[in-house]
Each structure stands twice: as C-alpha cells, then as structure tokens.
Length: 67
Image (cartoon, rainbow, N blue to C red):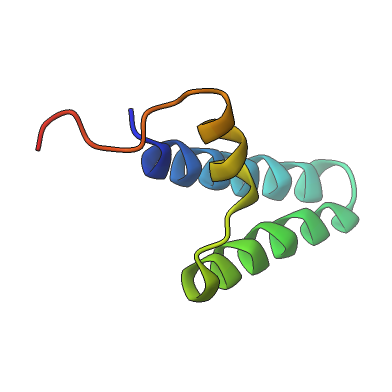
C-alpha cells in the first residue's frame, strides 16, 4: 500500500472514529474531525502532510506497485 492510500485510509478512519465518539461520548470530539479536515485541505494546496512525512521516514514506499 502506498503512502497516499495509507494517509487516505488513516484520515477516513479518524473521521469515522471521532464521529462515533462525538455521538456516544462528547460533541467535543468533532474538533478532531475538523482538525483532520483542515489538514486534508491544507495538504491539497501546500503538499505538506505530516503523516506522509512520518511514513516516509519509517521507510514506507511512495509509489504504486501496479503501475
């Protein structure tokens, strides 16, 4: 799995978990959803993604294996 797909899967998972926590625990968990959304938006414009940098430093490959 490439870094791009890992980032998308991680962001989607965090959004879904935070929505569940907001529903069952506290509405303050929606701030986590907003944070993830903001990071996705700024990443689209700047190309800077903290998770992608961490994954790259860990040695995860950047390209797609099927291309």
